[in-house]
Image (cartoon, rainbow over all chains, first blue to last red; front, side, top):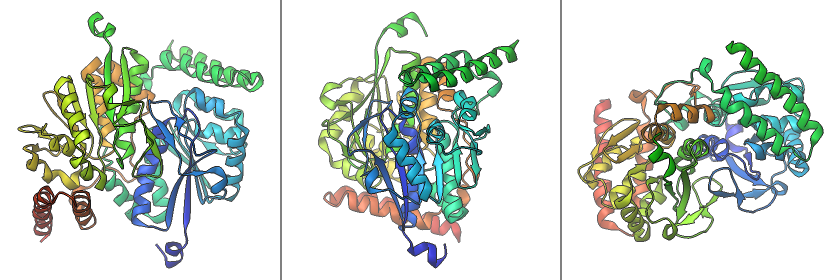
Amino acid sequence: MSTETSTETKTIAAVLFPGMTPVDLVGPLTALGMLEWLMPQYKVKVVAERMDAYQTDIPLRITPSHTFAQVPSPDVLLVPGGATPAFRAMADETLLDYLRGAAAQAEIITSVCSGSLLLGAAGLLKGREATTHWTVLDLLPEFGATPVRRRWVRDGDLLTAAGASAGIDMALHLVSMLEGDEVARLAQFGAEYDPEPPLGPLDWDAAPHELFAPAAESWVGDGLAGHPELRSRLLARLSAESRGFVEARR
Amino acid sequence: MSTETSTETKTIAAVLFPGMTPVDLVGPLTALGMLEWLMPQYKVKVVAERMDAYQTDIPLRITPSHTFAQVPSPDVLLVPGGATPAFRAMADETLLDYLRGAAAQAEIITSVCSGSLLLGAAGLLKGREATTHWTVLDLLPEFGATPVRRRWVRDGDLLTAAGASAGIDMALHLVSMLEGDEVARLAQFGAEYDPEPPLGPLDWDAAPHELFAPAAESWVGDGLAGHPELRSRLLARLSAESRGFVEARR
C-alpha cells in the first residue's frame, strides 16, 4: 500500500460473452468489489462487445458496464468460461482480438474455468502452465500450455483458476498479489468466505467421469460445429482422456 | 428419487431486486442449475417485479427470466441479500407481498446473507432460528427470529445462509434435502466446489469489526432513511452489537 500504488488508478476488466457461466465472473468480482471498496483506486468494469443484455447459462441475462472499445488496456484482465458457449466463443474473432489487445498491456491476466481455453484460443498460453475445469484439463496442450491440476496456477503474469467456484479462491489470491494479505483477509470477511461444503471436499478418486466425459464432448462438438479442424483436434484429446479414465478404473 | 418426485415439475424461484449482491443469487444457482441439468423436472427461474435490467452492487445489471406475477407459487423460494439496497428493499411492499405470497405456498424458503432480514421484514421469521451476514446477525431478533451463528441454519421449511458465499454451501445442502447426497455430490463436481481459501478459514477472533460495524450502520441508516421508526430500532441493535465488540476486546 505505497503512496505510489494508492494514487494510480488500476482498471480490472472482467469479460462477458454470450452463454457464459455467471459464477466465473461474479465469484471473483465479489472479492474484487471488496478491493474496490477498500482501495478506491481500483475500478472494476465488466466489458463486452456491446452494451446488450447477454444470455448466460443460468436463467438470467447480464448487461456489462462498458464495451471492449471503452476499456482497451486494463491493468488486470479476467476471462470467465462456460460450457458449449465457451467453445463457440473460441471462434469469436472480436472477442479473441480484445483478449490479445488487452493482454498485451495488462499487468496480470486471469481466467476462471474454461476461460483459460479462450486465452489459449487467442494464442496467449504458449509455453505457460495453466489450469481449467477438471473435465477439459487435457485440452490445454492443444494451445501449447502445460496443464496443472491445482485450484489456481500462477505462471508469471498469468493466473488461471480451476472450474467455476475456483474463481473465488483465485481472486482472493489476486488481491493478495495486488495489495497484500491484510487487504485480502478483509475482502474474505466481507464475502464471508469461510466455506463448509456440506459433503466435504471433493473425492477425486470418485470423480463422475461417466457423466462428465460425454458432457465435455458435447460442449466441444456443439460449440465448434462450424470449425471442424479445431473441433476434431480437441475431441481427439478428450477421447484419449476418456480412455484414460476407463483404463484407470479397470 | 421416487417416481412421484421425478415426474412432478418443481419450480425454484430466485428473487431479484435493485442493488442486490449477485453472488447471493448466482452462487446458489450454480448448484441449482446443475440440479436442473441432472433432473429436468426442476425449473429454475429468476423473478423480479419487472423484466428490467436491474443494477446490482457490482458493475453489471441482471435481467430476470420471469416477473413475480408469472411465478406466484414456486416450490422453492430463494431470497438474496445486499448492503444498503437490501435495507431499502425492506420498505418495498411489492417485493414483501411477493415474498409472503410465495412463502405461503412454498415447500422450502431459503435466503442468503441479508436476504433473511427481508424475510423478517415480510413477517416470515417469527419464532424461527435463522442466520445472516455476520455483520448484521444481531438484527434478527427485531423480526422475532433467534440468531444462530452457523454457515446455514435449517428450521423446518426455512433454510437461511450466512453471508454471500455461504449461499453455495446452503444450496448444496438444499440439493441433498431435495434429491439426496448423490445428486448434491454431482452438482458439487460440476461446480468444482473444492474450496481452498488462500489464507485459510476466517479467524473470527480477529474479525474486523472496526471496519464493518460502521459499514453496517450506514447500510441500515441510508437504506431506511425514509422509515425512521424501523431505522432507529435496527440502529439501536447495531449500536449494542458494536459496544459488545468493543467491550469484548478490553
